[in-house]
Amino acid sequence: MSAGADVVIGPLEDGVVVLTLARPEARNALRHQTMIELADAIERLDADADARGIIIAGGQKAFAAGADIAEMAALDGPALLAHPRTLAWQRIWRAGCPLIAAVEGWALGGGCELVLSCDLAIAGAGARFGQPEITLGWMPGAGGTQRLARSAGKALTMQLVLTGDQIDAEAARAAGIVSEVVPSGTALSRARTLAQRIASHPRQATRLAKQAVLRAFETPLSEGLREEHASFRHLASSEERAARMATFLRG
Figure 1 (cartoon, one colour):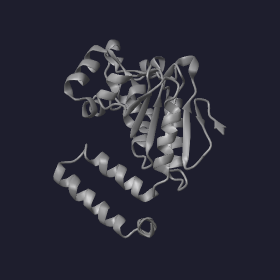
Figure 2 (spheres, one colour):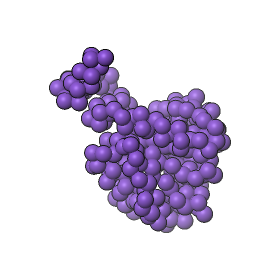
Figure 3 (tube, helix red, strand yellow):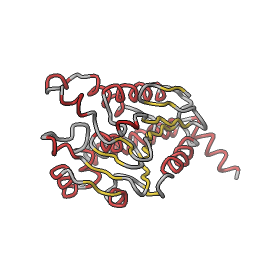
Figure 4 (tube, one colour):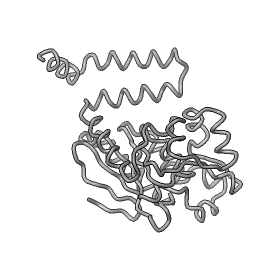
């Protein structure tokens, strides 16, 4: 196990790695260093053929309670354009490996956007979600309007973004922000179970399937269907598919 200043990288076990945000004194506020460490770790693991699932976790009281306000207050528009923080978000979004968030406590602002950046999210019953940037005269800038609207729809997204209100775990599940709600303190365990199941499947098929689902939010249906079928045909010639089907047919 290796420890960075802000992110603890767990061991690779059964194809799964847990990245733990480790700034409990700051409720895991996502300062620039945190984002860079997280992006670095995800990029390294994404290139590792043995890594099939990445879990992002926080603490019991806070997954991540937002950005580091002191740092953000020092940045203006031009500074943000090509800032390492901005690039870190983009690097995380490019990951081909499935990302799973294990959420306990607060997931606010950038923390909520980090959850939305993952492919799956499991929430403990006491988790809270929100985009409070408007209370500081700002707005979400890492997917908190776009990804949230695609999950939760216009009305709830407008309410959260324009009021800064929070919602609980069950409301987040109903809105599609998380896929499951589990008893408080068990989100990481459930996320690990799901990640191990995902990791048991062929790597190429998993990555292409993830890519195809994400394209559904980015392209017209006709284009998405064409790209889906192209990946479907590509996998038809894969050795992993042939081996898995042969095993199935042997019973």
